[in-house]
Image 1 (cartoon, rainbow, N blue to C red):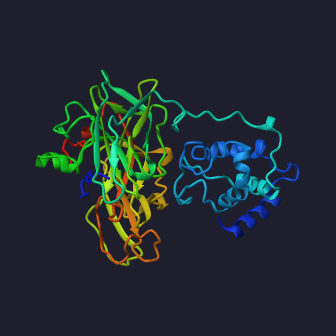
Image 2: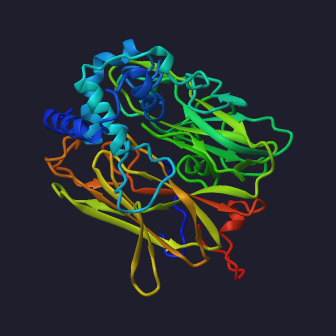
Image 3: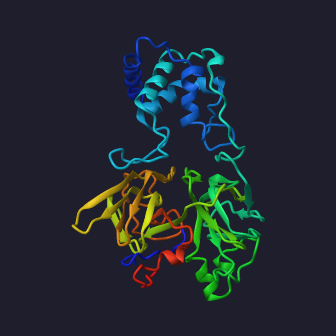
Length: 444
């Protein structure tokens, strides 16, 4: 991700498990219940938990929309459900409650297992629930505007690719409140991450950069312009990484795009043996009434670490204090291929720790975790982010267990970024939030 920090004061498919689950299903389903069928019992589960990915055009390799599509995978579905491998969710269930937790209930797991054990009967199509409505090409319930990078980016077959930017004017004549948004690359396999920043008309950031065409730091001639491709204080509309979900803010909360702003796409591409292009888009749904809270995306970042060669459990930590009262909404941890675990905590004045989220990190499913209830944070509350890295040969994704690892843009390097979202009064923007209540400006 972009190498900038916000300094909060101090910042600088198992067969045995499937058989077990099927056995449990035979005793868990009530005797009065009929054998589960696809249309009556399984399809509702798929609609609620699976079809966001398992439908035509989405990230999953097979759709689970019709009986014909789903029937060949009944045993696999039951096995993955029993192992809780699908739907993907990596939060420790003993810490926190999250509104977007897609995990199956024990009853739903039992239903899928019993259905597979019964040879996956179809049942009566008239028992099917109504098809779930999807906006074609998106995972949002509605889309008001799609902003696409005007010029496709050429991605080579091999080698490293510098962070690529493309600036797109919105042409908004008035400020817009954004209730929902989603980033959609046209070449998913080549996008390591994407960030869409909001650049207000008075911002000096990247002011000498071209508009509507891709560019990198190497294209910039001035030192400040080069610097601007690696650091920014701009507000973030949305972050995307493999497996991430759209933003859909609670009622009364939204992000704000000032009139005349540009959207700045920051793209990190990786190569996969064939040349291609990407033309990423962002879909936006506007709030239908003025919100009571403005959402800001902030981050806890530590870029000053060295992971020793072969270290299986290297710890990196960062913490700092919140400058003003806010409601904590959600988390989005970001590490690279050596990422192992990530957690967020509150450090209390008495030295105790209040855990907020613990994640068994998965680079290929970088999820956001939205609190079931917003958590009020008083000014001065100290937030902590902690990451653990596995740089050993036992990590199957490790690019080189014999190398010492530092912060860097490429996936063979590492990052430690703890994004989190807060809600503040609607008239408070990001720079204002970082002015402490006592009148002292904090460093960021």
